[in-house]
Length: 379
Figure 1: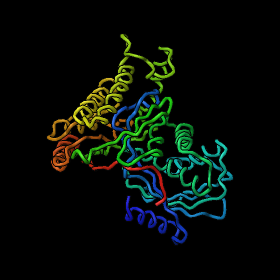
Figure 2 (figure 1 turned 90 degrees about the horizontal axis):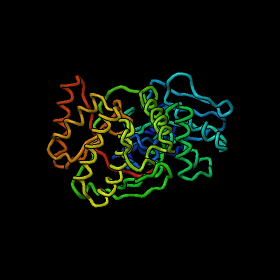
Figure 3 (figure 1 turned 60 degrees about the horizontal axis):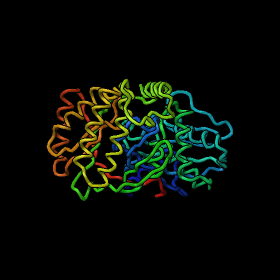
């Protein structure tokens, strides 16, 4: 987070609405999940971090009931408007449906929005990458409403409302992890979260002190989460838990003898996440990397949510000097990988993995070295 990003949000506002007098600027991070993939809707443990990258919004109150949305990341959409007195999603695909879904979910939960806003968003988070750009804009919008309209809204309730917006209005059956992590993020800490009870623990992440860099590799494969096979996996898990008569698949105490590949991934990934938390606490990054590698193998062979792009990035990364571990992160079917790389090897890692990927896929991957950041705030 820095002055330059704040200025870009202000510039976006001026581009859309003219003068920037009376502006307030807010930020919400993205997130990366170190391990515990496809676990949050199965009631198990996850180990995500908020990022220093995210979404900014420059905001000004209106005197009427109109909400006007503009994003510099979707500049071709121009300004999208909705009226609080006739609040509904916009037909067709538009980024504005994410903040509108939040307004609808706030209304569903009895929160009153008094007036409209002019909002201009600017994000430095890759879109459709598995770093939760959608949850970032949702949490940011809810946080803005909380502050400007003085809503009595604690952090966990805010996260739940944003999850409801995604489930009910966007149509993605996500768990609570993304929204919770973004709301509760703490610099240089991962969050060990029980997604069934929402009990959580901050775990210090000493990557910098240990000369380790967290590198995100982006496949640049086009995907839409709501249209992907993500919801199919959710439905499959619902069927499996009914067969075992448990509230959540992660309630299974051990791996059943006759377990399907889906159940095998869920049970073993939950166990890996518990071990990963212990590894972080002990600064055992070799073990953490090994668990990340095992996680990707399970996501590829058992849960079947990777694909050639993610597999190419991960398998190439795992062969590079200085790499402790690498895995896909997010929903899969494209998106991003996360790798633990010794800092002195980052440049060669990016070059070597990038070259192999471009040669095999015919298009380039993008790479980001990221820091672990904090939750939403005014900037």
